[in-house]
Length: 202
Ligand SMILES: [Zn+2]
Ligand SMILES: [Zn+2]
Image (cartoon, rainbow, N blue to C red):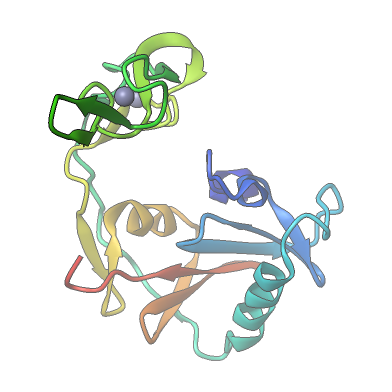
């Protein structure tokens, strides 16, 4: 089990970008799924906020290991397309928008009024992305491709999962799972985890 494949990538909550330890376990999560493996002392307990720590502990304590049943997830196919942000190069860098100095808005005035409008050069982001450079593309994480449709779903144990997440757990050996509310608890050998479902209205 490569726990590093289950962390967030480039998340503003920096502590999610690496595995961390909670009471006897090592955990990796992106906020939508969580993988829990036996303790690896290469990681630290102190890097996450107390609320994250206690959320993890609640999840771990809520799992009923008697409910796991083998499941097989039918072949999950994700149609990919070239990443539009980096044009399929995997590299993109961001720079401050020159038109609005990074504010995302521009002030205009005439003889009668002052106006504040969204900057059209950066769509109000204040940042412009350019193809190339040293940095991994934030849209595809350097993978050069992205799923062709943003929201594809797959039903697993009666829960509607984002297809990327269904694929991720479908690749685990000896997968067992059970649904609980809007989430699925899953297990693969010694390792276990949680994946959140998506509501219909998304
Ligand atoms: Zn701008
Ligand atoms: Zn990209």
